[in-house]
Structures are given as C-alpha cells and as structure tokens.
Amino acid sequence: MTLVDTTAALHHAEPQPHVPAWATQVENDAIRVRRGSVDAELATRHAGRRRLQIAYEIVGAEDAPVLLIAGGISAHRHVAANAADPAPGWAQGLLDAGRALDPRAFRLLSFDYVGADGGLDAPIDTADQADAIALLLDALGIERLRAFVGYSYGALVGLQFAARHPARLQRLVAVSGAHRAHPYAAAWRALQRKAVGLGQHQGGDAHGLSLARQFAMLSYRTPEEFGERFDAAPVLENGRVRVAAEDYLEAAGERFVARISATAWLRLSESIDLHRVDPRQIRIPTTVIAVEGDRLVPLSDAVALVEGLGLHGRLRVLRSRYGHDAFLKETDRIDALLGAALRETTAGVAP
Figure (spheres, rainbow, N blue to C red):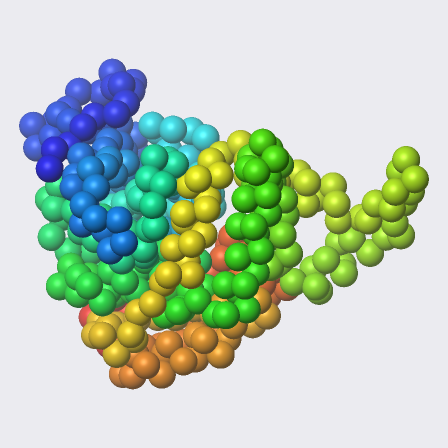
C-alpha cells in the first residue's frame, strides 16, 4: 500500500518535519489541511480483489483526536470550505467555528467512496467501504477514531465499520441510517435504477440519471414540505400540464448529473440495498439519530436497530418537515445532537 500526493502545494506551504511529504499541507490559523490518495488492494465481498485509490481530506490540528465524517452516496471527501479548497463542501456549515465538528477541536477525516469515480463497475458493499476506511487509517498511521459520524449512506458504512473493526472506533453516530434497507425504500431505488437503464438503452445516460434523481428527491423530502413550497395551480405549456414542483426537480437532476456518473450512481445505489448488519455484533457506544417522517429509513427501523444494539445503543428522534434530508437542512438541531453525543465520547460516558 502506498500514499500518493494528488494535488500541488498550496500557498507555498513547506512540509514540517513530522508531516509526510506525500500529502499536501496548508496551515491557516493552526488548522492544517492535508489531501491525497492511498493506493490499496481491497478484497471486496462480491467482486474479488481490486486495486484502487482511496482519496481523502483531513482537516485539523495534527495532535487532535480524529473523527471520520461520511455522507450520502453523492458526498465526497470535501466536507466544507477550507484553506486548500475554498469551494463549499457537501456539509457546509457543520464544520464552522463553535460547532460540534469544529476542526480546531478535532481532526476531521473524510474520503471518496469506493466506486464514486465510476471506475468500478461491479457490485459494491457497505462492508467494502468499511474495509477501505481501515486501509486508509493504516496508511495514515491512525490507530483509532474518536468517533465515526455517518449520515444516510455514511451511517450504513459506519455501522459496518463498527461491526468489522471495533478496536479502531470509540463511538459511532449514525444519522438517518439503519442496519438494513427497508423493502419500500429498496423498491423505490430499483425503479430509479430502471430509469437510468432506460436512459442508457436510448443513449441518454444524463437524462435517465436526472430522472432517477428527481424520483429520489420525492423520497428524500416530505409531502408536508412540498405542500408548503409548491401549492400553486398547474400551468399549460405548449398544450401540456406543468406542475409547480417540476422546475425544482429538474434543477436538482441537472446538478446531480454534473457531479456523478451513471455507473457510480448505479453501483452505490445497489450497495444500499446489499447492506446488512447484525446490530448484536456492534459492541461500541452508538447514538442513532432518526427523523420522524423519513420515508427511506422509517423510525421503526431505527427503533429495531437500537433494540438490537442493547445497552450499546441510544436513540434520538428529530421531527422535521425535511424528512431524510433533515441532516442537510436542520444544521443547528443536528449540531446540538452531535455535540451531545461527542461530549459523551470525550467524557467516556457509556450510552
């Protein structure tokens, strides 16, 4: 396994003696940013041994405890704007000063999911993602994570990591994710994949992927939100009826197509439905944050997960009109729940 520098030096920052030269380093008000990739061989569950690169970003003081942050299937290693990359990240706001995930208090590690680059056109399992994290930690010389904070797909990966690599994790926070794919949600995703397949068959990958994303948006959000935002009469355009939400859905589809390939999305979507973890195998403190009205991860599944975790599990329930997407929209409320869970970690308090 080797480490590869994937970016040029920024702001002419010189590597310090204790910082490996393979990683880009930027220092800004004592917050260090390192980006790079790991060349590794991963034994996947369904596709044999594969050579791949694991791209990562780590932000924070070198001697601070390490937290791993992972989001949905379209999330990536860039969580929030920093000195190395000023572009907004997928969880912009959650890493602001004073937040639970303040990079002045922790080293925050994130990575690109296996298959996210579209280069692996084979079945991918959440267990593969967990094992890739273990390889990444080995390469970075990180023995143990203070916590794993996973949202949506990231929560599934976090559960796998807790089950497969318990000695490397002190606490798990799983937001909007459970130990298995709910059959209703799996059926919803299967139809989305059929839309992509139809687009591919007709030579329109982008159109099929955009349509799949639009279907997905209906499962991420709630009827209550749509009732408030799009309660307008339909209009006639060129003899066709157009409803109020269509502009919003089409814009979401266009943005999605611009940042992920059809192959990557299909394989990561499948991996959600392949996901299975026995909660009884998880023996570390786990905070499960569920959202009432989440149509993809019903509250009943979160309850079943916590029951399986036994004394190791604690459930927190959030009421939000944003449904599954609450972790992206309810920044202040999610931050408060994260802060409580991480304070327990720091104090060594069992759930």
